[in-house]
Length: 598
Image (cartoon, rainbow, N blue to C red; front, side, top):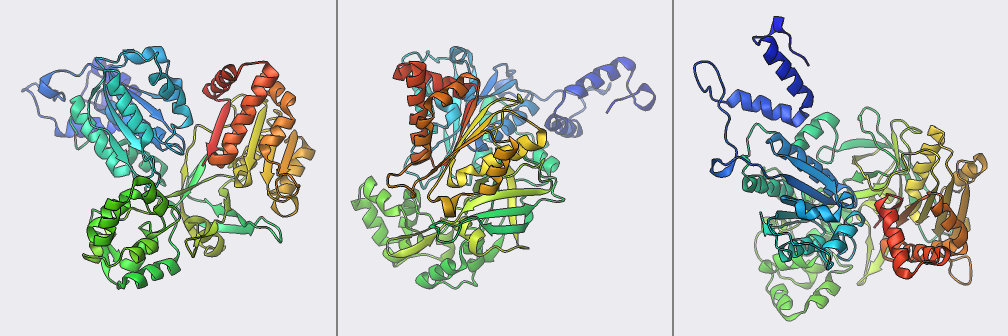
């Protein structure tokens, strides 16, 4: 867009200034400006516009805002970037940084600090927040007097240490002398609304008016990409195969979904989000236990939209996961639950919620008081399920592939199953549709420089992103050395994508492959054992600049792999244990040690 003297009411000097300004504006800034001009008051007869003072007490806002994000799956990174655009649209100076990109010595120079962070595993910081977290909790942390801060924390209330990383940052910043700009907000999996409410409150504290014409960045992004988490694409299932052979203890599904016409794009390392539905049989069991009429209508959002109770329990509400917060909320509707909570300690409560669902809760603590709508209003929404994408879009235009392990187990006298994984396994056929969106993950990406060596470590479905990596490298003719460590139970029945790995080995796309089939030998062998067996060569690859990727179970596999890498570095590099830790942390800061663990 550019203005010309011949078709505008401006002189040449004004046109030059306007054209220069337009070139620097983001889309959200243009939207804000158009709304501002439409509602501005004319200041005098010459047509000048009076600028609205958007600061408290008519004092211009001069403090710089800095946003630090700690993100594992990409949610916090996306929120931080949205909030950056919103604040910039309000004429604030804002810098947005991953916590890994922060120089610790510069933290004391920060003025107004906003932290957006998730919590990983058992209350741990996400990988890209570890360095900052450790620094702030060390004796080297500086005084932060004069710094104002606020924390937005994302988590999952079904975990004992809900939003722990955000709580820790909030507490530590105050201990270091910083003053709280706005109280910390802890968000559950359904985080979008409370997150936006937090940023609106922060805007007010910063002195920025919440101008109605200033569209949230999330709306701008959604308009540009069309399909998103708020507006998922209904992708048709093109293929749904069981990858395991006869006699396997597992069922691993390979799904191919059609993205044609969606405009959705993704890169290897990204995840695909699926909005799942509860098993109709479990819904009917819950309705029967509570003696509720499934045809009764209930509200399902703040806008007053209503669905039948049966449909709401099937497609909207989480009925498979219990948490301590849920028990505390529902206790107002059950005298026996209220009494039980008063008598039990935290560990007993956590032991109870593990492996149980809503059917267990309503059965164990009947009778229940209140209306059906009172009970349903206390439930949280079904969490989105994220799966590592197992395909390259360059190799598979208009398609996305997934590798999903069907979860089935027995607990507390009843058979249980994974909500989304068993939906895909048992209740999804070719021709059906799944609501999906792409979750970008900048923390799990192939090296930008071609020919860079990569070491890929995964067990079970953790091999999915490496299929995408190698498809991408084959398509882009990236001949960098690649080494895959893969683990499963049995060679004959559980060697996922075996023929593809073998073809890539033959073609040179895959340089080396080491496998560990834990149930095929008398002594169980896992991927970490294969790493240690190749200790010297693994270290040589590291010295040659290799990137290391780990994908899969965090509790066991990922921790064991990290310990193996530390042992290799210490042994082959002749380092102390502390020096090996420093070496691995440096790899992570250089993006050469990346993990996608769950």
